[in-house]
Image 1 (cartoon, rainbow, N blue to C red):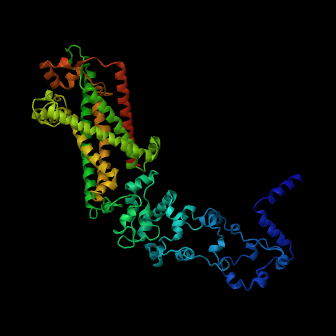
Image 2: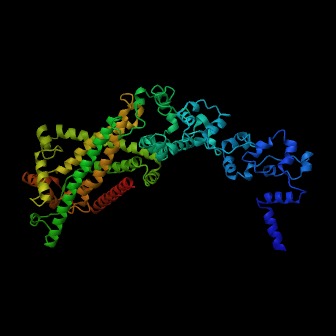
Image 3: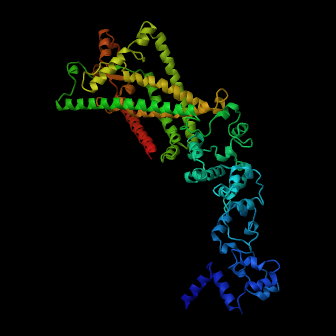
Length: 618
């Protein structure tokens, strides 16, 4: 008996008990209430025949007015019924509506929109009905001029109406902020636009393309938006309701209106700025020839340099590795030329402290620029947001990228000053400017470099001995000269992108589009070259593994000097200059720190390559 009472109490407290109670009470009445009973009094207000033909017609009046349980009390107005709770049947819609702006701010009930609740017919899914309903309260003068509205009136049910962007029952609170336009609202509406304009099947059905979404996501606006940085969304440029073709004078993106639109984010701009191409399709040669050919040129440059030097690297590795294996098999642990030299462990200065510090700063700035730039290059990659969060967020990464860019630009200008001083004043390297520019210590290519390149190629395929190098090898000169091209390309394009409002004071905005292509592709080329070719030259060559310590310690061993730069060694030896370059052996701590920095750089570089391949493949 006690168990039965407990179960009865639990059942009475459940939400479904109200329905059970109504049914029970009605059963215990003399007879149930019918619509005819209600219409005796309410017939003048409710048309019974229309109600019977409505979607609610199969329901009795008490299905909604569930608290009418005593007809006598009701007719004597002793019992006044409460408001109808639509949640009894329409639970999902009611739950959505509880969080909408119409409920939380306006206090509207369902009846505010569904005023003809007794005569509602089945919705035929016509979107015209939604327009008529919303415009009964909201002025929609802008919307009814838009392409969306005209398409609806032409019978295109795929075009957008109020509910497609704002929701039907769950109209969010921030939708009512109007000109306040929060970041949350911007993101919500951008996604709403993408929902239709990014659907290829839907766009094809409407004789449109998804190029707008695709090209937006490839721009700086689209990429940093993916990373969570506030950026211009669709409605910022195209407006919220009056979305018209560019050719229409009333369109927000008409040439006469662009300056006003762009000024909302970019202050102090001129007409040049509006020449920036917001949705550039880089594959469209007819419409964007300059952008198309810039992209083609950068792709060919990147591919040709990397393929050529990857081939050079592979051939070098094959020859060096096979030669090393042969020497080990034959028990040759040291080159015949080095067998009879005295004190092979003596060290000579190769890089001054200035050069080593310069290289060390370059390492840190280059890695910093790579780690802060790659997430923007590949915003869809799974590691992009993780990398940015590790750095300190997208905003912090952009700031850090610009600081590091400034540092490396300063480094480059210092290097230019060094080169100018070398050419004009360093008489230790030659009495005349011509001798210095074409001498052994110059970075400029000369006939000897071509001869070394040819000899190296023959050695790769077992057709001759390896070349004898001087102070600089041909591949080291290429590294240095690549810096000049890279810094000019990345540096100038980066400055143009840094302050586009200022840039457009002097050049048309489409130049910024070109600068972005060059900056992005040249940076990728630099990363790919440094972390593959340069790393091979300094780490993976079998004779240097695990790394070349010279750039960190500043020293080169006597055996290494003779083996790798025999021409310079012989020349200095004949001129009795070697003793002037002799320095003490590097200390243990110096070698240890050099190894840590070098190996850490190698690991980080290779990991970066994995990230890039991951982003490209997946």
